[in-house]
Amino acid sequence: MRVEDFLIETIAYMGDDVIEMDPFYSWGQFLKLKYLSEYCFVAELLLYLLGMLLKASTIVMDPQSRRSFLISFYCKNENIANWFGWGRCFMAFCEKWDFRECEPLMRMILYSTESDLLLSKVLSEKVGKYPLLEIEVRQRLQSLFLDHTTKDERDYGFWISAILRTQETTELQGKLFMIMFGPIKITLSRIETIDWEVLCNETINVQHIYTKLLGSIARGIHHMMTTLNLGCYAWTDNQLSLLMEEITMVPNRWALHNFAALLALHPQIIYIALFTRLSEGRMDEAAHVFHAVKTILHRWGVFVSGAVSDVMLKTFRSMSEINRRLFLSSLLKIESYQLSGLLLNTPFNVETFHTELSSARSISALMILLAKNV
Image (cartoon, rainbow, N blue to C red):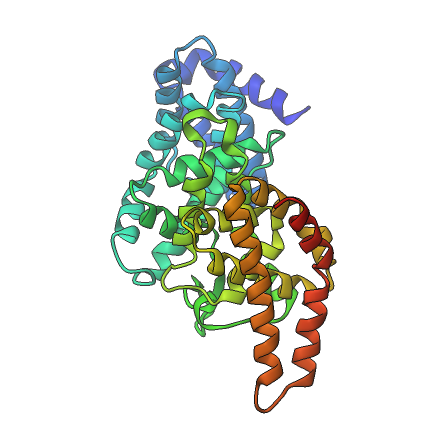
């Protein structure tokens, strides 16, 4: 017999007796069975199936009643400490809902699980003050809302957007983003904590370490770039650019090459990274960022012009004619200054100079393309 059939027959069998007294009783007892607590994957599967069952059972209710019904079920069984399992239950329950109905459910979940209190406590203090609570918040938010497969990639962007918008300022949103996606370190006591300093103090040269440290951050930003068609949950280019600036200043400004590596992992993010800098006339700063990305990609053995031509052309065409010329001038000027500086350094490092010269040549096709669009 399939598990789904077993669940349906069980609730039908017990319906005349126990469920008339308490519709949540039988499932609470069922989920507390010893073998379920020993085999997490079984509990997670059953919670998912229960989410589908609760969804079907409440289909004739209005959205508010459906949300209340689900939260009542959770409150009856809150002693089951399996956040991923509950996440599967909640996601099954609201699958294919309108996003405007999902947000109130999310807020009810945060309140019922007391995750909103943890958020308030952690975000009101300096980063790193409550390392264990920061990890607890991260695990809850990821397990409840983000660690689930979906056919619609917009779902990830929506949940990230809705979670961040529980905070009113860009500063708090940036801090919360890093709690959810920032790099992790293992302490001497074998405890996981968020590593707030590694991106600020160190320049890392190994690609797989960059991927480990920055991969989640890059994917999170990439998913938020897919929210353009989500109405009130969409993030404009300017909002994303300001959020990214805040992210890369938590708790202090990141080392330039670490920021560049983030963009190199997902080159489409380059547009967002340069947006505010270019719109505010910070052409030289934007050029420094681009050349740092170029150097990282060249070091990784990536064909730079091929990797960034589309996004750089998109960035270029979004600017006025005069700003295009100013930006191209800054790109050429910064490249020249960097090569001249290396050439005149004492002691002179031949290998470094030739590496930078080689990376400069790798974007010659891109520079010609941009020049044709001035």
